[in-house]
Each structure stands twice: as C-alpha cells, then as structure tokens.
Amino acid sequence: MTSKAPKFHDYDVLILGSGAAGLSTALHTNQSLHIAVLSKAELSSGNTSYAQGGISAVLDDNDSFEQHVADTISAGVGLCDPEVVAKTVSEGSEVIDWLLSIGVDFTRDNNPQNAQQLHLTREGGHTRRRVAHVADATGNAVQNQLIDEVRKRDHIDLHANYIAVDLITTRKLGHKDDRCVGAYILNIETGEVEVFRAKNVVLATGGASKVYLYTSNPDGACGDGLAMAWRAGCRAANMEFMQFHPTCLYHPKAKSYLLSEAIRGEGGKIILEDGSEFLHDFDPQGVLAPRDIVARAIDYKMKKHGLDSVFLDISHKSVDFIKDHFPNIHARCLSLGYDMTKQPIPVVPAAHYTCGGIATDEHGQTDIDQLYAIGEVAFTGLHGANRMASNSLLECLAYGRFAGQHINKSTNINAKHIDIPAWDASRVSDSDEEIVVAHNWDELRRFMWDYVGIVRSTKRMQRAKHRVDLLLSEIDEYYSNFKVTSDLIELRNIAVVADLIIRSALKRKESRGLHYTLDYPETDSSLDNINTILTPNLNESAAGWETETQLTSGHK
Image 1 (cartoon, rainbow, N blue to C red):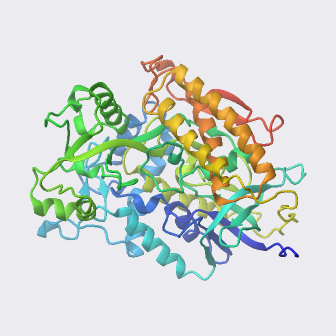
Image 2 (cartoon, one colour; image 1 turned 90 degrees about the horizontal axis):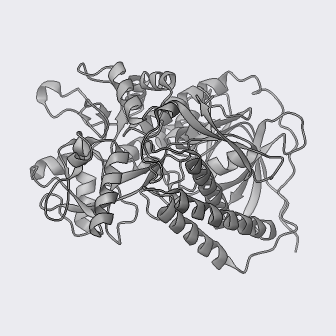
Image 3 (cartoon, helix red, strand yellow; image 1 turned 60 degrees about the vertical axis):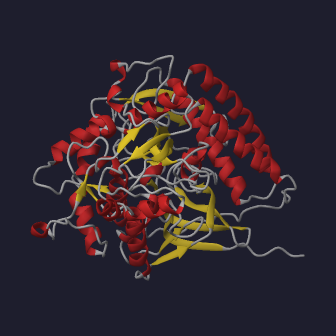
C-alpha cells in the first residue's frame, strides 16, 4: 500500500486560531497578502464565543482613559506595564467603532433620550460603567460578525478541523538564524500531517485553562500555542497567574457554563445557603472586588464549611430586568431547572483565563522573527497579576490591529519560501494504548486542581512538579513511537503548560493577585514590577523542558 503524497500549502500569513485575536489580525492585513486562518474545530469553537460580559472601553463622559488605566493597574497588583496599559486602553473607543462599522449590534441604552448611546455595564475591578456588550452574549455576537466579515475577503482562506503539531523554524532546519517559516498541521479528518509554509505565523490559539479539572473554557483551551512557542525557543512569562472565575454554574450537566460577572455588576449578590452575604468580610468592594479576591473567598467558605457551592442571587430584581439584561443566561439556567428570576443559582469557581503567556513586544512579535502571539496566548504586560474583567476582548482586538499593521510593513513579505521537509511518520505506528492518553490527561488535570489551584503551598507544588516530570517523560516516549492524534497533541501541550505554571509558581515566593501560597501569604513590595520569566534551554532538551528561570523587571 503506497502512502499519500504529503500536502504543502504556501501562504504569506498563517494564523493559528479563529477567535477574535486571529480573525481581527487577518482583517487588518493588506488584501494583497494570501492568508490562512486555521481552527482545530469549528471556526466558532474557541473562547471568544463564550465571552458573555463585553469589551471595556472609555465611552462615557463620566469616565476617562486615566481611570481605566488606574483600574487595570490596580487589578494587576503591581505587575502591569503602564505603557502597555495606556496604549491598549487608548484603543478602546476605536475598537468599538470598528466593530460597529462591520455590523456588531451592541445593546443600546433603554432610556429614550439616550437611545443612540450604547448601554454600558460594570464588572469586577471597574470603578465606572465602561463595558459595552451585546446583551449577555457579546463574544458570540463578535465572533459571528468577524467570521462573516472574513468570508467576504477573497485573500483569506479558512480551514476548520486542523490542529498544529509544531512550529517550523530555520534553527530547527539547521540554519544560523532563527525565523518561523511555517508549521506542521494535522488534518483531523484525514489523519495526515500537512506542511503549511508561511512568511509570517500568528499564534492566536487562546489560553490553557483545560489544564485544570474545572474550567469555564471549551475543550480546546489546551495551551497549544504556548507549548509550541516554548518548544520553538520563546520565553514564557508570569505563568503562575491563572485566573479562576468566581461564578460557574454548579450542575452536572452544565459543563463549562459561566455566569457573567455583569450579573454582579447589575446588583447580583453572592450568598451562602442561609442567604447571608460574606464578601465584604474579605474586601470593601464586596461582589465587585477583583476576581482573585472573590474566587479565593468562595474557595475559603466552601472548604471551611464543606460546601458543594455558594449561590449567586439576582432574584430581587424584576423579571423584566433579568430577562432583558441576561436572556441567554436565564434561558440556559431555566433549561437546567433553575429560574434566576425566583431563586439563587449554585456557583463554584473554575479556571478561566491565562494571564501569563508567550512574551511579546508592542506589535505582538515574539522572540522569534516572523512569529507573533496575539490574545490570551500572549504576555503583553497588560494584565499583570490579575486580569480586569472585559479587558481580554479589548486586548485581542487591539493587538490584532497592531500585529496586522506590523505584518503589512514587514520586509520579508516578498521573500521566497524556504524548503521544508515533509512530516516523517515512517518510524511510528498506530497506537493500541489510547487509554494511556486518557489516563494521563485525567491525572494531570486532577493534580493541577488539587496542588496548583486557587490556594497553593510549596509542598503541594513540589508534589505536582514531581508528577509532571514523570508525565512529560512518559508522554515524550509515547509521542516518539506512535502516530500523532489530536488527543495526543493536546496532552503533550497541556503537560508542557502545566510544567511552566508549576515552575513559575514555585519561583514566586509571595502571594500576589492570582497566585496565593500558604507559605508566603503576604505581598512582597520589593517584587513590584518584577515578572517571572522562563527561558528555554534548548541545548539541554529539544522539548525545551529544562529552563533557566529568573525574576525580571519589565517584560521585553
């Protein structure tokens, strides 16, 4: 039986990820460039579609750029880059105007005198109403409109059900320089690995919250871009800061369903079963405190009293108000037997957002030439030790523009594609032990939840480090002997990301923002503006698992 001839694809720009970050990058590139956007599932399967709250932007006379900057820096607990924050915040109104121009139908003010004004809500960490939204399904509306807009562009090709295996760099090919020139991509439908050559590669692959047992993220949030960039030689930063959203619906059939922070912004309370509130015991802002404080307070109460959940209650508001502001959440809860107009809804914290990522500059450029990282996969310096609500879509859309404009000006765009060998699967076989992948996947997510979750300790993290080292070795051997599958690719990637999280968390000997350790419960002011930077030692390990770790001021 003869094997199929390998497939090669040539593009000016290869974008891995079809969420807001990837699609906005594509839409801001010149129409003279041939662009591919790849999604490892359906085009709308990423995190963008799950974003309920909205996009933060200064759109009201009672607000200011300075206040938005101050709120973001306050939420970031001393680790935000002020220049990056200012640059990103200043893009807010332009981002909203651009989305309006392509047809995103933001919710308007219900006051007849202000009918043309956008309705702005308020979320945790914000001192003003500045979150523009489309009811309670902003991400879905933005995602669908971006897809519609991309489909109008003849120079952009969309490929669903393709998952990246690894990046291709000139260093890996034996050249003296280090540029990204494409990627090996598994066609999930055929099972064959194809070669995508590109003059610029953009990682817009999202975060890695599936490294934890309980998460608000879809199944694809496995840290693929993080792991690939790390193996290619890029630095990772602040991986200890994993955000846990305080309010995910607690129900066996409600997998990954998040209850928007806007519910609290519109008067929702977090209560115990007896109706008592408790968040003001932890922070003066109560339910509108930053997510790390709220999640930690809930975690504390649940563990102290042996609770399965706490409750989110907005039933004191009118039925019309709730249905008008939260139509999709109301319908989803109702389908599971909860009527939020009449009763509190059980909620628990769950892993939600990766605040660290691959280190980039102000254009989204990584340490490797021609390789960009946009959105949740990237560490720009915007979020610091804790991301403020609704700054994520703002970052995706702003940096999509920055990267697109930078690619348009790149000098390599007229260069020829270099020769890249086809994927070699001649020395591997089909696996007859898929149970190994499933078992390792389950074990990793459980010990990350137990040992490196909302509250940590040095002993717990050391246990996690010992286990992840064993898993990495086992996965590496498995990967070397069997044909790649999407499950194996995701397991390999999520194990690398788990290792980066543990390494970073062990290095930060203080509690700050999303990183809380029982051994160092206080924030160390001498570590203000000091980020955790991990650098691959590629001479030690082709996988990049041996690292030189340092605490560094700044991020560039």
